[in-house]
Length: 187
Length: 187
DNA sequence: TCACTAACGCAAATATTTTGCTTTAGTGAT
DNA sequence: ATCACTAAAGCAAAATATTTGCGTTAGTGA
Image (cartoon, rainbow over all chains, first blue to last red; front, side, top):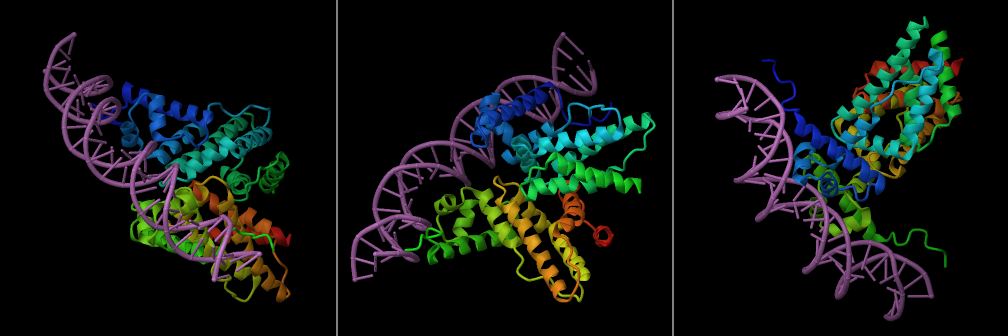
């Protein structure tokens, strides 16, 4: 009756996707990027390699897929009492994760793949989390902060340092940029 | 007598490196990322595959290497008469290149590989070019612009948009950020 | 000119990826 | 429930790509 939106998302597909994703995460943790091969993943997930190749195309796309899933926030940002402190706390945590070894690996997987879908989702999650913080602040009667400005003034420079300068932003560095954000919105 | 700095950079190595790099560029242009395989590159460069594997490890690292080479500026920034117009002109050109399809492919190759050496060089080239602009301005008696601020205010946000939002920055967008840079240094 | 050895070539051994065909199991209609 | 339909998985053979051991070539320094 209704057009099936996804052709056949039924139980089996989902089960296999879950098994494969889990296999990737496990192998990635146990051994690094080495030992992370399609046949190895297939074996661990109790699936044939051809299933993986047909569904994901190649290892890079599978890894990007898994990385995006892991990037997806499982918890809403902590409520620390005020919009500004919520946002700062969340940013600190976010960039701590992004500059860790696993975080960097996820970024590599996400950015190293053609078709920006994965990277786009990454940006989407970020905005979504900030949106939650904004809405909570709004409920408190606080002035929301422009998400565009947050990415422009705080997120982008930190990401640039992680990606291109191999730096691990200190909490002070994050606070400094946050101050710039705040003062630019106050003005 | 003197410790050999690079083990054996002599003629043959260089020749082969050049042949392989050229083969990569040619194949990349003729066919896209498909058809860009180590054996294909080896054939085109008239080299055995094992040479490539032994020297570069795998395709990803070879591509990153080639990408870095292509990112390396072959010309100094144009002299347009003033430091500010030099910088703006150079930024516009730089981001036009970076948001093009080949530019994005290079960024993928550079960022998608472990060991940040490639990405670091990318940032290095950028700073180097800005440095040239600064020095030329200095010779004219102009006030140089802090490179750190340029990357923070202009470069990072644009790069973020290219990488995570799949946007192609317009010239106006670049100019707008440039204005912010200028006003923040004037203040 | 010569001894030395890093880097290459070659080819056999492995490992991965692709592909044609078969089987399984959700899905919607009866 | 049952059944026809078909997307997605399994299997196994073929095609490709990667690794490796060993012989050869050609820069390098004495």
